[in-house]
Every structure is written in structure tokens, then in C-alpha cells.
Length: 520
Image (cartoon, rainbow, N blue to C red; front, side, top):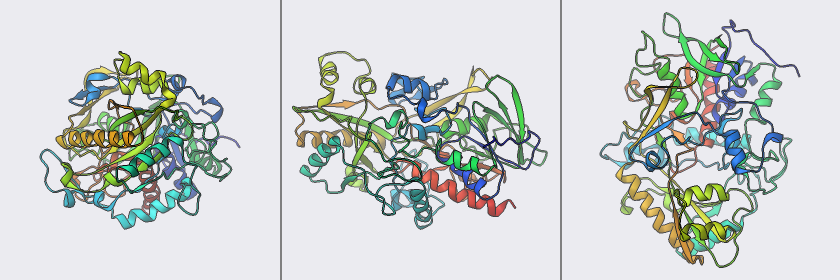
């Protein structure tokens, strides 16, 4: 099929920036409903054949390695201040390397302002979308993504790592322990095969069993003849007309040439670091603080799940790397229970990583016998990952560096995070509980892993009922500019304890319906 190309001066197209979970889903939904879409993707278009089951190679191939600076009191600012946030720069975005956990949020997490009370330094907010409304779209997203355990789709086989974690969890009294809901085919579906249990979900799925927009939403949109995908094209600025409505996107292609694409509307789905960066850099005399930023919320309330890990060393082999990356979850601690010394909750997730990443997680300085024995006996390890609810703080934010710029002349992003006392208390609780689980399962020693920079980036363009409290309405539509949309995890008012991708997809489907109703 011939590639679809729309003219640069075609002002009837929707321009979607980013081709990950939010951007590609939105683009496909719009194309299926008769809309013309130009999708700008900063990274290359790979294929399944380009993936390699090699952690070092895949990290260089997929990761958004453009320079960023981390500041604040979080550990990343000290251990890896220029470390990337584990997002992907390629067609398909971070769905290329996600663990494919597809969870719904809980009711209390959508009502954090009402349920959690007043906390010092925290800008709590309720979601302007009710749980029942989101459930309708979670159901549709689960069907689209082929989530196991829903719509009659069988579960994936349990991993050995999960069996160890499950046993230890039940020994210490946990009861809400289960195999995960994965957006990974447990049987052939939609022309893609069942999972082969290769264990390289984070390096790109060689069998295409894992849901990834590279080979799901993108080709479906292309089949309509209304989708113009432009890989290696980086958005630099969003332009607007005299009335303040956006009308074009300035971008640079792989050869360094700049182009101006006219647009009827613009939807940004560039991840919660790059999305506010683009809005802030698009400041003008009419919008001196950046597009959609009259409330001064663009870039603020940066959320990243509270993470940590624990690794148990066992007498007998576990082979945690056999099977999917994320093998099962303990849900008991995801409840709302302030008696533990913190609000919100966290998941304990049976997790495996390869030797290179393990070395970086368990001890960044990499020295000493306690470190080397874990690497030498890698096949005797079982791992548990923490995914905890991060609290929205106004001054945790993404901003533009005052002097340092990238090769295109755009200021590099500064990601500032000061962890709240609630975060620290939650992580401490996780370490204690994870060690209990692993030792109950028979671990002879346990090593606590260092927190890493987040791959779950959220919150920097949060949705709100009142314009002064956020950036967009419940449909991701800018309060200030009626044809400017945000289509990624940036719109999350709170983070929840659950992985965000299912909700990003659900919101993108809902947003597409709103756009079609609104823009005739």
C-alpha cells in the first residue's frame, strides 16, 4: 500500500505528536472515524526484526537518550543526574519496551483530595472523570489490547519467579496475590502469535505477542489511507493564529530541515517530560508562560511511581528470567490504610531483570562481595518490584534549562523532584514487607535495590474541573486553547498504585470520541 502524504499547507489535518500508547491510539481512532492525521515521531520506525534480545544493544537502540538533568533530593539526582527516564524514542514509543501490565485504577485513587485529607506540601486533586465512566473505556482498552484475564482471554503461564513470590506472600499472610493481567497474547489473536515466554519484554517483543502500537495501532491507521506517519521528525514549536488557536507545528526532519505543518488541531502525546517541554518552548507574546499555561500548571506536579526493589538469594535455582518480565502481583498493600504511616498504596510485583540492569539496580557503585555474589548466582535470585503511588507536589516539575540547549536549539528539560515524607515512609514499608516475603519463601539473604529514574512519567499537564487548577479538562482538551489536546499520562491528576498504560489508552479512545463529536 502506498504511503499517505498530506501537504504541509493542508490545514484540515489533525497533528498528533508522538506514536506511543496515547498518540497512536488517538490517531488510529481518528482515522477510523474519517479524520486525516499527520503523526510526528521523533524516533525511527523499527520492525520486529530490528529488535535484539540483548540488554545493552536494546538500551542504545530504543531509549530516549537526549540529555536531561535531574535535581532535587530524590536518589536519581545523586546517582544519575543525567540519566534518561527509560522512555523510548521510536515509532510505538514506550510500548516497545513496557512490561505490558494492564491494571485499572481504584476508586479511592480517583478521589484522592476527598479521601486522603490535607497533607503538607501536597496538591491533591480528584479526577474529573468518575470511576464508572473510566470503566467503560477500560473495558474497550482491554479488548483492544488483548489483556489476559478479561473478555474471556486466558491467563499467561505463571513464572517460576512468581511461584516463589506467591508462596512467600501467602506464608506471611497476604491473600490478594495473583497472576498479572498482561497485554500479551496468551493465544494467537489479531494476526499475532501467542507469547513464547522469552523474557525480553523490555527489549522489544521478537514474536510481536506483546501489544505495541508499532505493529497494532500504526498499521491499522495506515490501512485507512488517512494516516501520514513521519518518523525521525521532532516537533520544535506549536504555532497559533491571531485569535490564539493553534494552527501549525514547526518540526525538524532527520536531515535537519525544518518544516511547518498546518493543522486544524494539535494533540501532544510526547510523554510527561517532553510534552510540557514543548508547551513551555512554544511561548509567545500571547502566551508568555507557554501554551495552555495561564494557570502556571504546565510542567508542575510531575509524578513518577515510587519504585524500589528487593532481591532474594536462594539455595536452589529460581531462573527468574524464564518467562515474562513481570510475572504476578501482591495487591494487599495497594489499599487505602493510613495506619501504616502513609496514604496511598503500592504493589509488590514479581519482577525479573537481566544481569546488566540488575548490576545497576542492586548497587550502583558495584563493589564488594555482597554485590558480586548476587551477580555470580543470578539464576538463584527472585525479585520483587515496588510500584507505589506518588503524591502530586506543585514544585516537583519539568522546566526548561536556562542556558543548555539540544542540537535543535531547544532548552533541555530539568526534572526536579523532592520526595515527600509519605514517599519515604512507603518505600521503607515496602523494603520490610518484600524482605519478609522473600525470606518466608526461603531466601538466605536479601539485597535492597536502589530506586531508579521513572519510566512511568505522569502529571505535568493535569486535568481539572476549574481552569485555575490544571491544564486540561476531563477530555485532555486545553482549558485555554480549544483545539489543543494532551493525549498521554501528563493529564493524570494523581498517579495511583497501578501501572498507567491501560488508562492512557482508555483516555485516548474517549478523547477521540470527544474530538469527533466536537470538530465536525
